Amino acid sequence: MIIILAIMETEGSESGEKGAIFSRLATEYAKKYQGKIQTLPKVPVKSLNDFSIWYTPGVAAVSLEIAKNEDLSFEMTWRWNSVGIVTDGTRVLGLGNIGPYGAMPVMEGKGLIFKYLGGVDAVPIPINVHDKDEIVKVVKAIEPAFGGINLEDIESPKCFYLLEKLSSEMNIPVWHDDQLGTAGATLSGILNALKLTGRTPEKTKVVFFGSGAANIATVKLFKAAGFDLKNIIMVDSKGVLHAEREDMDSLMKNNPWKYELGLQTNSANIKGTVVDALEGADVLIAASVPGPNTIKGEWIRKMAKRAIVFALANPVPEIWPEEAKRNGAEIVATGRSDFPNQINNSMVFPGVFRGALDSRTRKINEKMIVHASLELAKFAEENGINENYIIPKMTEWEVFPRVAAAIASKAVEEGLARKKQTKEEFYIRAKEIIGKNREIIEKLMNLGYIEDIRR
Amino acid sequence: MEIRIRDLEENDLKEATELVVRLKKFNSEHDPLFALAENLENIVMNYLKESITLDTRDVLVADDEGKIVGIILAEIVDRLFYEPAKEVRITELYVLPAYRKKGLGKKLLDEMVKKERNKGCGILTVEFPTENLLAHKFYTSQGMRSIISVYGKTMK
Image 1 (cartoon, each protein chain N blue to C red):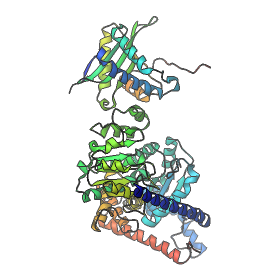
Image 2 (cartoon, chains in turn cyan, purple):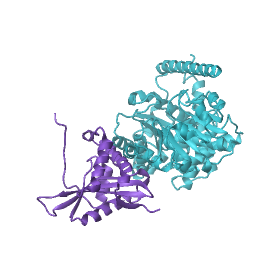
Image 3 (cartoon, rainbow over the protein chains, first blue to last red):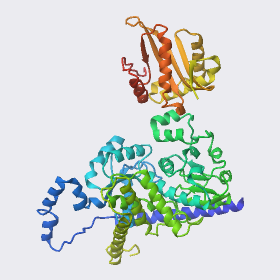
Protein backbone atom coordinates (compact mmCIF):
# COMPACT_ATOMS: atom_id res chain seq x y z
CA MET A 1 0.00 0.00 0.00
CA ILE A 2 2.82 2.34 0.87
CA ILE A 3 4.46 1.67 -2.48
CA ILE A 4 1.25 2.40 -4.33
CA LEU A 5 0.82 5.71 -2.58
CA ALA A 6 4.40 6.66 -3.23
CA ILE A 7 4.10 6.01 -6.95
CA MET A 8 0.85 7.88 -7.17
CA GLU A 9 2.38 10.85 -5.47
CA THR A 10 5.33 10.92 -7.78
CA GLU A 11 3.11 10.75 -10.83
CA GLY A 12 0.75 13.30 -9.36
CA SER A 13 3.40 15.84 -8.55
CA GLU A 14 5.11 15.25 -11.88
CA SER A 15 1.91 16.01 -13.73
CA GLY A 16 1.33 19.03 -11.54
CA GLU A 17 4.84 20.32 -12.25
CA LYS A 18 4.50 19.75 -15.97
CA GLY A 19 1.14 21.47 -15.96
CA ALA A 20 2.60 24.48 -14.21
CA ILE A 21 5.46 24.71 -16.72
CA PHE A 22 3.10 24.53 -19.69
CA SER A 23 0.85 27.18 -18.15
CA ARG A 24 3.76 29.54 -17.57
CA LEU A 25 5.16 29.06 -21.08
CA ALA A 26 1.75 29.41 -22.75
CA THR A 27 1.12 32.71 -20.99
CA GLU A 28 4.59 34.01 -21.80
CA TYR A 29 4.37 33.03 -25.49
CA ALA A 30 0.83 34.34 -25.88
CA LYS A 31 2.22 37.76 -25.00
CA LYS A 32 5.18 37.32 -27.32
CA TYR A 33 3.37 35.97 -30.39
CA GLN A 34 0.01 37.68 -29.81
CA GLY A 35 -2.00 34.95 -31.40
CA LYS A 36 -1.20 31.64 -33.07
CA ILE A 37 -2.54 31.93 -36.61
CA GLN A 38 -2.81 34.55 -39.31
CA THR A 39 -3.99 34.87 -42.91
CA LEU A 40 -1.41 34.96 -45.69
CA PRO A 41 -1.91 35.54 -49.42
CA LYS A 42 -1.63 32.58 -51.76
CA VAL A 43 -1.61 34.55 -55.00
CA PRO A 44 1.41 36.44 -56.33
CA VAL A 45 1.49 40.18 -55.72
CA LYS A 46 4.38 41.54 -57.75
CA SER A 47 3.10 45.07 -58.17
CA LEU A 48 0.14 47.12 -57.07
CA ASN A 49 -1.36 46.55 -60.52
CA ASP A 50 -1.93 42.94 -59.52
CA PHE A 51 -4.64 44.14 -57.18
CA SER A 52 -6.70 45.00 -60.25
CA ILE A 53 -6.93 41.27 -60.76
CA TRP A 54 -7.23 40.07 -57.17
CA TYR A 55 -9.41 42.94 -56.18
CA THR A 56 -11.45 45.55 -57.99
CA PRO A 57 -12.13 45.94 -60.86
CA GLY A 58 -11.21 42.37 -61.94
CA VAL A 59 -12.76 40.58 -58.99
CA ALA A 60 -16.25 41.79 -59.92
CA ALA A 61 -16.36 39.28 -62.77
CA VAL A 62 -15.64 36.45 -60.34
CA SER A 63 -18.36 37.71 -58.00
CA LEU A 64 -20.87 37.77 -60.82
CA GLU A 65 -20.11 34.19 -61.79
CA ILE A 66 -20.49 32.94 -58.23
CA ALA A 67 -23.68 34.97 -57.75
CA LYS A 68 -25.14 33.06 -60.67
CA ASN A 69 -24.01 29.69 -59.34
CA GLU A 70 -23.25 29.58 -55.61
CA ASP A 71 -21.47 26.23 -55.83
CA LEU A 72 -18.72 28.01 -57.76
CA SER A 73 -17.73 29.59 -54.43
CA PHE A 74 -16.03 26.23 -53.79
CA GLU A 75 -14.14 26.51 -57.10
CA MET A 76 -13.19 30.16 -57.20
CA THR A 77 -12.66 31.21 -53.55
CA TRP A 78 -11.00 29.75 -50.49
CA ARG A 79 -14.34 28.36 -49.32
CA TRP A 80 -13.35 24.83 -50.41
CA ASN A 81 -10.72 24.75 -47.68
CA SER A 82 -12.15 26.92 -44.93
CA VAL A 83 -13.79 25.98 -41.66
CA GLY A 84 -15.39 28.20 -39.01
CA ILE A 85 -14.57 27.20 -35.44
CA VAL A 86 -17.63 28.39 -33.55
CA THR A 87 -17.91 28.56 -29.77
CA ASP A 88 -20.06 30.39 -27.25
CA GLY A 89 -17.44 29.74 -24.59
CA THR A 90 -19.83 27.88 -22.30
CA ARG A 91 -17.65 24.82 -21.75
CA VAL A 92 -14.07 25.64 -22.45
CA LEU A 93 -11.74 22.70 -21.73
CA GLY A 94 -12.28 21.81 -18.10
CA LEU A 95 -12.67 25.47 -17.21
CA GLY A 96 -16.42 25.68 -17.62
CA ASN A 97 -18.32 28.72 -18.79
CA ILE A 98 -15.59 31.32 -19.21
CA GLY A 99 -17.23 33.13 -22.11
CA PRO A 100 -16.27 33.75 -25.73
CA TYR A 101 -13.31 36.08 -25.12
CA GLY A 102 -11.56 33.57 -22.88
CA ALA A 103 -12.31 30.83 -25.41
CA MET A 104 -10.31 32.51 -28.17
CA PRO A 105 -6.85 31.10 -27.30
CA VAL A 106 -8.27 27.58 -27.42
CA MET A 107 -9.95 28.21 -30.78
CA GLU A 108 -6.68 29.61 -32.14
CA GLY A 109 -4.90 26.47 -30.99
CA LYS A 110 -7.53 24.44 -32.77
CA GLY A 111 -6.96 26.51 -35.88
CA LEU A 112 -3.25 25.81 -35.66
CA ILE A 113 -3.83 22.04 -35.48
CA PHE A 114 -6.34 22.25 -38.33
CA LYS A 115 -3.68 23.88 -40.48
CA TYR A 116 -0.69 21.83 -39.42
CA LEU A 117 -2.26 18.38 -39.44
CA GLY A 118 -5.07 18.83 -41.92
CA GLY A 119 -3.99 21.68 -44.17
CA VAL A 120 -7.31 23.37 -43.39
CA ASP A 121 -7.79 27.15 -43.12
CA ALA A 122 -9.80 27.35 -39.92
CA VAL A 123 -11.08 30.63 -38.52
CA PRO A 124 -11.86 31.05 -34.80
CA ILE A 125 -15.35 32.50 -34.25
CA PRO A 126 -16.14 32.93 -30.55
CA ILE A 127 -19.64 34.43 -30.39
CA ASN A 128 -21.37 36.48 -27.75
CA VAL A 129 -24.65 34.61 -28.12
CA HIS A 130 -25.81 31.86 -25.80
CA ASP A 131 -29.44 31.00 -26.53
CA LYS A 132 -29.49 27.82 -28.59
CA ASP A 133 -31.77 29.08 -31.31
CA GLU A 134 -29.81 32.33 -31.54
CA ILE A 135 -26.65 30.28 -32.07
CA VAL A 136 -28.43 28.34 -34.80
CA LYS A 137 -29.23 31.63 -36.53
CA VAL A 138 -25.66 32.89 -36.28
CA VAL A 139 -24.08 29.68 -37.58
CA LYS A 140 -26.53 29.40 -40.45
CA ALA A 141 -25.84 33.02 -41.32
CA ILE A 142 -22.13 32.36 -41.85
CA GLU A 143 -22.63 29.38 -44.17
CA PRO A 144 -21.60 31.37 -47.28
CA ALA A 145 -18.15 31.94 -45.77
CA PHE A 146 -17.16 28.35 -45.07
CA GLY A 147 -16.92 24.83 -46.38
CA GLY A 148 -17.52 23.38 -42.93
CA ILE A 149 -18.36 24.28 -39.33
CA ASN A 150 -16.57 22.99 -36.28
CA LEU A 151 -18.54 23.56 -33.08
CA GLU A 152 -16.26 23.71 -30.08
CA ASP A 153 -16.51 23.92 -26.31
CA ILE A 154 -20.28 24.36 -26.12
CA GLU A 155 -22.06 23.07 -23.03
CA SER A 156 -24.20 19.93 -22.91
CA PRO A 157 -27.08 19.34 -23.64
CA LYS A 158 -27.17 22.46 -25.84
CA CYS A 159 -24.41 20.97 -28.00
CA PHE A 160 -26.59 17.96 -28.96
CA TYR A 161 -29.39 20.22 -30.10
CA LEU A 162 -27.02 22.43 -32.09
CA LEU A 163 -25.29 19.56 -33.83
CA GLU A 164 -28.56 17.88 -34.78
CA LYS A 165 -30.30 21.03 -35.90
CA LEU A 166 -27.38 22.53 -37.81
CA SER A 167 -26.41 19.25 -39.49
CA SER A 168 -29.91 18.81 -40.80
CA GLU A 169 -30.41 22.40 -41.90
CA MET A 170 -27.05 23.33 -43.41
CA ASN A 171 -25.52 22.28 -46.68
CA ILE A 172 -21.98 22.04 -45.35
CA PRO A 173 -20.71 19.53 -42.80
CA VAL A 174 -21.15 20.44 -39.13
CA TRP A 175 -18.98 18.76 -36.54
CA HIS A 176 -18.83 19.04 -32.77
CA ASP A 177 -15.39 17.91 -31.82
CA ASP A 178 -16.07 17.38 -28.12
CA GLN A 179 -18.68 14.83 -29.15
CA LEU A 180 -17.60 13.34 -32.44
CA GLY A 181 -13.83 13.74 -32.33
CA THR A 182 -13.62 12.13 -28.91
CA ALA A 183 -16.06 9.41 -29.92
CA GLY A 184 -14.11 8.64 -33.10
CA ALA A 185 -10.76 8.42 -31.34
CA THR A 186 -12.19 6.33 -28.51
CA LEU A 187 -13.82 3.91 -30.93
CA SER A 188 -10.63 3.34 -32.91
CA GLY A 189 -8.64 2.65 -29.72
CA ILE A 190 -11.29 0.30 -28.43
CA LEU A 191 -11.48 -1.62 -31.71
CA ASN A 192 -7.79 -2.46 -31.48
CA ALA A 193 -8.00 -3.19 -27.76
CA LEU A 194 -10.79 -5.67 -28.51
CA LYS A 195 -8.64 -7.38 -31.14
CA LEU A 196 -5.77 -7.71 -28.68
CA THR A 197 -7.98 -9.21 -25.98
CA GLY A 198 -9.94 -11.50 -28.28
CA ARG A 199 -13.30 -9.75 -28.17
CA THR A 200 -15.93 -8.65 -30.67
CA PRO A 201 -17.98 -5.45 -30.46
CA GLU A 202 -21.39 -7.10 -30.39
CA LYS A 203 -20.64 -9.18 -27.27
CA THR A 204 -18.50 -6.74 -25.33
CA LYS A 205 -19.86 -5.30 -22.10
CA VAL A 206 -18.97 -1.65 -21.80
CA VAL A 207 -19.43 0.68 -18.85
CA PHE A 208 -19.36 4.40 -19.55
CA PHE A 209 -18.45 6.44 -16.50
CA GLY A 210 -19.54 10.04 -16.93
CA SER A 211 -22.47 10.95 -19.16
CA GLY A 212 -21.44 14.24 -20.65
CA ALA A 213 -21.23 15.18 -24.32
CA ALA A 214 -18.22 12.95 -25.06
CA ASN A 215 -19.58 9.74 -23.59
CA ILE A 216 -23.11 10.21 -24.91
CA ALA A 217 -21.71 10.73 -28.41
CA THR A 218 -19.38 7.76 -27.95
CA VAL A 219 -22.22 5.44 -26.98
CA LYS A 220 -24.13 6.51 -30.08
CA LEU A 221 -21.08 5.91 -32.27
CA PHE A 222 -20.46 2.51 -30.64
CA LYS A 223 -23.98 1.56 -31.62
CA ALA A 224 -23.26 2.54 -35.20
CA ALA A 225 -20.08 0.43 -35.04
CA GLY A 226 -21.95 -2.73 -34.08
CA PHE A 227 -21.92 -2.67 -30.29
CA ASP A 228 -25.14 -3.84 -28.67
CA LEU A 229 -26.64 -1.06 -26.53
CA LYS A 230 -28.13 -3.75 -24.30
CA ASN A 231 -24.57 -4.58 -23.16
CA ILE A 232 -23.75 -0.97 -22.41
CA ILE A 233 -24.22 0.67 -19.04
CA MET A 234 -23.93 4.40 -18.48
CA VAL A 235 -23.05 5.82 -15.10
CA ASP A 236 -23.10 9.44 -13.99
CA SER A 237 -22.89 11.34 -10.72
CA LYS A 238 -26.30 9.94 -9.73
CA GLY A 239 -25.24 6.34 -10.32
CA VAL A 240 -26.21 3.79 -12.95
CA LEU A 241 -28.57 5.07 -15.62
CA HIS A 242 -31.62 2.85 -16.09
CA ALA A 243 -35.14 3.23 -17.41
CA GLU A 244 -36.71 3.63 -13.99
CA ARG A 245 -34.24 6.01 -12.46
CA GLU A 246 -36.00 8.80 -10.64
CA ASP A 247 -34.67 11.62 -12.79
CA MET A 248 -35.69 10.03 -16.11
CA ASP A 249 -38.65 12.41 -16.56
CA SER A 250 -36.40 15.34 -15.91
CA LEU A 251 -33.96 13.98 -18.49
CA MET A 252 -36.78 13.51 -20.98
CA LYS A 253 -37.44 17.23 -20.70
CA ASN A 254 -33.90 18.57 -20.36
CA ASN A 255 -31.63 16.03 -22.04
CA PRO A 256 -33.65 13.76 -24.34
CA TRP A 257 -30.42 12.30 -25.78
CA LYS A 258 -29.40 10.90 -22.43
CA TYR A 259 -32.99 9.89 -21.73
CA GLU A 260 -33.11 7.78 -24.90
CA LEU A 261 -29.89 6.05 -23.92
CA GLY A 262 -31.39 5.44 -20.48
CA LEU A 263 -34.13 3.48 -22.24
CA GLN A 264 -31.94 1.65 -24.73
CA THR A 265 -28.91 0.68 -22.65
CA ASN A 266 -28.58 -1.56 -19.59
CA SER A 267 -31.04 -4.26 -20.58
CA ALA A 268 -30.15 -6.18 -17.40
CA ASN A 269 -31.67 -3.20 -15.57
CA ILE A 270 -28.74 -2.96 -13.19
CA LYS A 271 -29.24 -0.30 -10.53
CA GLY A 272 -26.87 1.21 -8.02
CA THR A 273 -23.38 2.60 -8.37
CA VAL A 274 -20.48 2.25 -10.80
CA VAL A 275 -19.23 -0.68 -8.71
CA ASP A 276 -22.43 -2.62 -9.48
CA ALA A 277 -22.06 -1.74 -13.16
CA LEU A 278 -18.44 -2.89 -13.36
CA GLU A 279 -19.13 -6.42 -12.14
CA GLY A 280 -17.90 -8.57 -15.04
CA ALA A 281 -17.59 -5.66 -17.49
CA ASP A 282 -15.04 -5.96 -20.32
CA VAL A 283 -14.44 -2.29 -20.95
CA LEU A 284 -14.57 0.86 -18.85
CA ILE A 285 -14.60 4.20 -20.61
CA ALA A 286 -14.35 7.09 -18.20
CA ALA A 287 -14.80 10.67 -19.31
CA SER A 288 -15.74 12.19 -16.01
CA VAL A 289 -13.78 14.37 -13.60
CA PRO A 290 -9.99 14.55 -13.26
CA GLY A 291 -8.39 11.96 -10.99
CA PRO A 292 -6.28 10.38 -9.84
CA ASN A 293 -8.75 8.81 -7.41
CA THR A 294 -12.00 9.25 -9.29
CA ILE A 295 -11.82 5.55 -10.16
CA LYS A 296 -10.51 3.23 -7.51
CA GLY A 297 -8.25 0.26 -8.15
CA GLU A 298 -10.61 -2.11 -6.38
CA TRP A 299 -13.36 -1.21 -8.86
CA ILE A 300 -11.16 -2.44 -11.70
CA ARG A 301 -10.79 -5.76 -9.92
CA LYS A 302 -14.56 -6.27 -10.36
CA MET A 303 -14.13 -6.29 -14.13
CA ALA A 304 -13.72 -9.33 -16.39
CA LYS A 305 -10.26 -10.77 -17.07
CA ARG A 306 -8.16 -8.92 -19.66
CA ALA A 307 -10.06 -5.72 -18.85
CA ILE A 308 -9.75 -2.59 -20.95
CA VAL A 309 -9.74 0.77 -19.17
CA PHE A 310 -9.90 4.16 -20.85
CA ALA A 311 -9.47 6.95 -18.30
CA LEU A 312 -9.87 10.04 -20.43
CA ALA A 313 -10.20 12.95 -18.01
CA ASN A 314 -7.64 15.72 -18.46
CA PRO A 315 -5.24 16.83 -17.19
CA VAL A 316 -5.17 13.90 -14.74
CA PRO A 317 -6.83 10.59 -15.71
CA GLU A 318 -9.49 9.19 -13.36
CA ILE A 319 -6.99 6.48 -12.41
CA TRP A 320 -3.24 6.31 -13.12
CA PRO A 321 -2.46 3.67 -15.77
CA GLU A 322 -0.10 1.87 -13.37
CA GLU A 323 -2.80 1.64 -10.75
CA ALA A 324 -5.33 0.30 -13.25
CA LYS A 325 -2.87 -2.31 -14.46
CA ARG A 326 -1.95 -3.37 -10.97
CA ASN A 327 -5.61 -4.12 -10.45
CA GLY A 328 -6.01 -6.28 -13.51
CA ALA A 329 -6.44 -3.99 -16.50
CA GLU A 330 -4.59 -5.31 -19.53
CA ILE A 331 -4.88 -2.27 -21.76
CA VAL A 332 -5.12 1.28 -20.48
CA ALA A 333 -5.58 4.47 -22.46
CA THR A 334 -5.68 8.06 -21.27
CA GLY A 335 -6.02 11.51 -22.78
CA ARG A 336 -2.35 12.28 -22.17
CA SER A 337 0.61 12.21 -24.47
CA ASP A 338 3.06 11.18 -21.74
CA PHE A 339 1.41 7.76 -21.31
CA PRO A 340 0.96 5.08 -23.98
CA ASN A 341 -2.32 5.04 -25.93
CA GLN A 342 -3.34 8.67 -26.02
CA ILE A 343 -6.98 9.09 -27.02
CA ASN A 344 -6.94 12.47 -28.65
CA ASN A 345 -9.46 14.27 -30.88
CA SER A 346 -6.54 15.65 -32.82
CA MET A 347 -6.06 12.19 -34.33
CA VAL A 348 -9.49 12.53 -35.88
CA PHE A 349 -10.71 16.00 -36.78
CA PRO A 350 -7.88 17.20 -39.06
CA GLY A 351 -8.22 14.17 -41.33
CA VAL A 352 -11.99 14.17 -41.08
CA PHE A 353 -12.24 17.77 -42.25
CA ARG A 354 -9.59 17.28 -44.91
CA GLY A 355 -11.72 14.47 -46.35
CA ALA A 356 -15.01 16.30 -45.80
CA LEU A 357 -13.73 19.38 -47.60
CA ASP A 358 -12.08 17.44 -50.44
CA SER A 359 -15.27 15.51 -51.15
CA ARG A 360 -17.37 18.63 -50.50
CA THR A 361 -19.70 16.51 -48.48
CA ARG A 362 -22.94 18.02 -47.23
CA LYS A 363 -22.74 16.12 -43.96
CA ILE A 364 -20.52 13.91 -41.85
CA ASN A 365 -22.74 11.06 -40.71
CA GLU A 366 -22.08 8.31 -38.17
CA LYS A 367 -21.19 5.75 -40.81
CA MET A 368 -18.48 8.05 -42.08
CA ILE A 369 -17.04 8.52 -38.59
CA VAL A 370 -17.05 4.77 -37.95
CA HIS A 371 -15.22 4.36 -41.23
CA ALA A 372 -12.62 6.92 -40.16
CA SER A 373 -12.19 5.14 -36.81
CA LEU A 374 -11.69 1.83 -38.60
CA GLU A 375 -9.03 3.43 -40.78
CA LEU A 376 -7.23 4.87 -37.76
CA ALA A 377 -7.33 1.46 -36.10
CA LYS A 378 -6.11 -0.21 -39.28
CA PHE A 379 -3.19 2.18 -39.57
CA ALA A 380 -2.04 1.25 -36.07
CA GLU A 381 -2.63 -2.42 -36.79
CA GLU A 382 -0.41 -2.26 -39.87
CA ASN A 383 2.38 -0.94 -37.66
CA GLY A 384 1.85 -3.73 -35.16
CA ILE A 385 -0.52 -3.18 -32.27
CA ASN A 386 0.26 -4.14 -28.70
CA GLU A 387 -0.97 -3.13 -25.25
CA ASN A 388 1.02 0.09 -25.47
CA TYR A 389 0.12 0.94 -29.05
CA ILE A 390 -3.55 0.69 -29.93
CA ILE A 391 -3.93 4.01 -31.70
CA PRO A 392 -1.57 6.03 -33.92
CA LYS A 393 0.37 8.89 -32.37
CA MET A 394 0.16 12.56 -33.37
CA THR A 395 3.64 12.35 -34.82
CA GLU A 396 2.56 9.78 -37.41
CA TRP A 397 1.27 12.39 -39.81
CA GLU A 398 0.77 9.90 -42.65
CA VAL A 399 -2.38 8.78 -40.84
CA PHE A 400 -4.21 12.05 -41.53
CA PRO A 401 -4.49 11.62 -45.33
CA ARG A 402 -5.62 8.05 -44.67
CA VAL A 403 -8.44 9.28 -42.42
CA ALA A 404 -9.25 11.96 -45.01
CA ALA A 405 -9.53 9.39 -47.80
CA ALA A 406 -11.71 7.17 -45.60
CA ILE A 407 -14.12 10.01 -44.85
CA ALA A 408 -14.20 11.31 -48.42
CA SER A 409 -14.75 7.93 -50.06
CA LYS A 410 -17.48 7.06 -47.58
CA ALA A 411 -19.14 10.43 -48.31
CA VAL A 412 -19.23 9.43 -51.97
CA GLU A 413 -20.68 6.04 -51.05
CA GLU A 414 -23.32 7.67 -48.86
CA GLY A 415 -24.36 9.99 -51.69
CA LEU A 416 -23.38 13.08 -49.69
CA ALA A 417 -20.32 14.17 -51.67
CA ARG A 418 -20.44 16.88 -54.30
CA LYS A 419 -17.05 15.79 -55.61
CA LYS A 420 -16.69 12.18 -56.55
CA GLN A 421 -13.25 10.59 -56.71
CA THR A 422 -11.76 7.27 -55.75
CA LYS A 423 -10.33 6.62 -52.33
CA GLU A 424 -6.86 6.56 -53.84
CA GLU A 425 -7.38 9.94 -55.54
CA PHE A 426 -8.66 11.47 -52.30
CA TYR A 427 -5.65 10.06 -50.48
CA ILE A 428 -3.16 11.54 -52.94
CA ARG A 429 -4.86 14.92 -52.84
CA ALA A 430 -5.03 14.99 -49.02
CA LYS A 431 -1.42 13.93 -48.70
CA GLU A 432 -0.36 16.65 -51.10
CA ILE A 433 -2.32 19.40 -49.36
CA ILE A 434 -1.26 18.40 -45.86
CA GLY A 435 2.36 17.89 -46.95
CA LYS A 436 2.49 21.24 -48.70
CA ASN A 437 1.09 23.09 -45.72
CA ARG A 438 3.60 21.51 -43.38
CA GLU A 439 6.34 22.49 -45.79
CA ILE A 440 5.15 26.10 -45.91
CA ILE A 441 5.12 26.27 -42.12
CA GLU A 442 8.58 24.72 -41.93
CA LYS A 443 9.94 27.15 -44.54
CA LEU A 444 8.46 30.11 -42.68
CA MET A 445 10.16 28.87 -39.54
CA ASN A 446 13.48 28.30 -41.28
CA LEU A 447 13.35 31.78 -42.76
CA GLY A 448 12.58 33.26 -39.38
CA TYR A 449 9.17 34.64 -40.35
CA ILE A 450 7.77 32.37 -37.73
CA GLU A 451 10.12 33.30 -34.97
CA ASP A 452 11.91 30.65 -33.02
CA ILE A 453 10.73 30.29 -29.46
CA ARG A 454 14.24 30.60 -27.99
CA ARG A 455 15.11 33.91 -29.60
CA MET B 1 -47.28 -10.01 -23.19
CA GLU B 2 -50.55 -8.12 -22.83
CA ILE B 3 -50.75 -5.07 -20.62
CA ARG B 4 -54.08 -5.01 -18.83
CA ILE B 5 -55.93 -1.81 -17.92
CA ARG B 6 -57.97 -2.23 -14.75
CA ASP B 7 -59.28 -0.42 -11.68
CA LEU B 8 -56.87 0.46 -8.90
CA GLU B 9 -56.91 -2.04 -6.05
CA GLU B 10 -55.72 -1.83 -2.47
CA ASN B 11 -52.72 -4.06 -3.32
CA ASP B 12 -51.50 -1.61 -5.95
CA LEU B 13 -51.26 1.38 -3.63
CA LYS B 14 -47.51 1.26 -3.07
CA GLU B 15 -46.56 1.06 -6.74
CA ALA B 16 -49.31 3.43 -7.82
CA THR B 17 -48.14 6.01 -5.29
CA GLU B 18 -44.64 5.81 -6.71
CA LEU B 19 -45.90 6.65 -10.18
CA VAL B 20 -48.00 9.61 -9.03
CA VAL B 21 -45.08 10.92 -6.95
CA ARG B 22 -42.89 10.76 -10.08
CA LEU B 23 -45.49 12.81 -11.95
CA LYS B 24 -45.74 15.38 -9.17
CA LYS B 25 -41.94 15.69 -9.14
CA PHE B 26 -41.98 16.23 -12.88
CA ASN B 27 -44.70 18.89 -12.47
CA SER B 28 -42.55 20.66 -9.90
CA GLU B 29 -39.87 21.15 -12.53
CA HIS B 30 -42.18 23.24 -14.64
CA ASP B 31 -43.06 26.02 -12.19
CA PRO B 32 -42.02 26.98 -8.66
CA LEU B 33 -45.72 27.20 -7.77
CA PHE B 34 -45.69 23.41 -7.96
CA ALA B 35 -43.24 23.10 -5.09
CA LEU B 36 -43.85 19.70 -3.53
CA ALA B 37 -45.62 19.18 -0.23
CA GLU B 38 -43.65 17.67 2.60
CA ASN B 39 -44.81 14.15 3.23
CA LEU B 40 -45.85 13.90 -0.43
CA GLU B 41 -45.89 10.12 -0.50
CA ASN B 42 -48.34 9.75 2.36
CA ILE B 43 -50.61 12.37 0.88
CA VAL B 44 -50.60 10.67 -2.50
CA MET B 45 -51.21 7.27 -0.99
CA ASN B 46 -54.21 8.48 1.03
CA TYR B 47 -55.56 10.31 -1.98
CA LEU B 48 -55.33 7.16 -4.08
CA LYS B 49 -56.80 5.02 -1.31
CA GLU B 50 -59.83 7.32 -1.02
CA SER B 51 -60.45 7.03 -4.72
CA ILE B 52 -61.09 3.29 -4.43
CA THR B 53 -64.35 3.99 -2.60
CA LEU B 54 -65.09 7.53 -3.81
CA ASP B 55 -67.69 7.80 -6.57
CA THR B 56 -66.36 11.02 -8.05
CA ARG B 57 -62.75 9.94 -8.40
CA ASP B 58 -61.55 7.03 -10.50
CA VAL B 59 -58.13 5.50 -10.98
CA LEU B 60 -57.10 3.00 -13.62
CA VAL B 61 -53.73 1.28 -13.75
CA ALA B 62 -51.78 -0.47 -16.50
CA ASP B 63 -50.78 -3.89 -15.22
CA ASP B 64 -47.90 -5.70 -16.91
CA GLU B 65 -48.06 -9.15 -15.38
CA GLY B 66 -48.33 -7.85 -11.86
CA LYS B 67 -46.18 -4.74 -12.30
CA ILE B 68 -47.94 -1.38 -12.33
CA VAL B 69 -46.44 0.52 -15.26
CA GLY B 70 -48.98 3.30 -15.84
CA ILE B 71 -51.73 5.16 -14.05
CA ILE B 72 -54.56 7.56 -14.85
CA LEU B 73 -56.67 9.48 -12.39
CA ALA B 74 -59.89 11.34 -13.11
CA GLU B 75 -62.30 13.50 -11.13
CA ILE B 76 -65.92 13.89 -12.07
CA VAL B 77 -66.83 17.56 -11.94
CA ASP B 78 -70.30 19.11 -12.04
CA ARG B 79 -70.74 21.98 -14.46
CA LEU B 80 -73.47 24.17 -12.99
CA PHE B 81 -73.67 26.74 -15.74
CA TYR B 82 -72.89 24.77 -18.86
CA GLU B 83 -73.93 21.85 -20.91
CA PRO B 84 -73.08 19.01 -20.79
CA ALA B 85 -73.48 19.13 -17.02
CA LYS B 86 -70.86 16.54 -16.14
CA GLU B 87 -67.20 16.61 -16.99
CA VAL B 88 -64.45 14.07 -16.48
CA ARG B 89 -61.19 15.81 -15.68
CA ILE B 90 -57.93 13.90 -15.95
CA THR B 91 -55.63 15.09 -13.19
CA GLU B 92 -52.86 12.48 -13.43
CA LEU B 93 -51.56 10.37 -16.27
CA TYR B 94 -48.19 8.71 -15.97
CA VAL B 95 -46.48 5.87 -17.82
CA LEU B 96 -43.05 4.48 -16.86
CA PRO B 97 -40.32 5.54 -19.35
CA ALA B 98 -39.69 2.03 -20.68
CA TYR B 99 -43.38 1.67 -21.58
CA ARG B 100 -43.75 4.96 -23.44
CA LYS B 101 -44.25 5.49 -27.16
CA LYS B 102 -46.27 2.29 -27.33
CA GLY B 103 -49.72 3.82 -27.16
CA LEU B 104 -50.23 3.00 -23.49
CA GLY B 105 -51.10 6.59 -22.51
CA LYS B 106 -53.78 6.67 -25.15
CA LYS B 107 -55.09 3.30 -24.04
CA LEU B 108 -55.39 4.50 -20.42
CA LEU B 109 -57.15 7.64 -21.60
CA ASP B 110 -59.58 5.72 -23.82
CA GLU B 111 -60.44 3.29 -21.03
CA MET B 112 -61.11 6.14 -18.64
CA VAL B 113 -63.34 7.88 -21.17
CA LYS B 114 -65.27 4.65 -21.66
CA LYS B 115 -65.72 4.25 -17.92
CA GLU B 116 -66.86 7.82 -17.30
CA ARG B 117 -69.17 7.94 -20.27
CA ASN B 118 -71.16 5.27 -18.49
CA LYS B 119 -71.41 7.62 -15.52
CA GLY B 120 -73.01 10.30 -17.68
CA CYS B 121 -70.00 12.53 -18.36
CA GLY B 122 -70.26 14.51 -21.59
CA ILE B 123 -66.90 16.25 -21.85
CA LEU B 124 -63.31 15.31 -21.21
CA THR B 125 -60.79 17.78 -19.81
CA VAL B 126 -57.25 17.48 -18.53
CA GLU B 127 -55.05 19.70 -16.39
CA PHE B 128 -51.28 19.92 -16.53
CA PRO B 129 -48.62 22.60 -16.00
CA THR B 130 -48.63 25.15 -18.80
CA GLU B 131 -44.92 24.63 -19.38
CA ASN B 132 -45.29 20.88 -19.88
CA LEU B 133 -44.98 20.93 -23.64
CA LEU B 134 -44.88 17.16 -23.93
CA ALA B 135 -48.31 16.92 -22.29
CA HIS B 136 -49.54 19.68 -24.57
CA LYS B 137 -48.35 17.72 -27.57
CA PHE B 138 -49.96 14.49 -26.39
CA TYR B 139 -53.38 15.95 -25.60
CA THR B 140 -53.61 18.02 -28.77
CA SER B 141 -52.79 14.84 -30.68
CA GLN B 142 -55.86 13.37 -28.95
CA GLY B 143 -58.04 16.10 -30.45
CA MET B 144 -58.15 18.31 -27.35
CA ARG B 145 -57.61 22.07 -27.19
CA SER B 146 -56.93 24.66 -24.51
CA ILE B 147 -60.32 25.83 -23.20
CA ILE B 148 -59.52 27.68 -19.98
CA SER B 149 -56.42 29.33 -18.58
CA VAL B 150 -55.37 29.40 -14.95
CA TYR B 151 -52.82 32.10 -14.07
CA GLY B 152 -51.03 32.24 -10.78
CA LYS B 153 -48.57 34.01 -8.51
CA THR B 154 -47.38 33.78 -4.95
CA MET B 155 -49.30 36.10 -2.65
CA LYS B 156 -47.05 38.50 -0.79
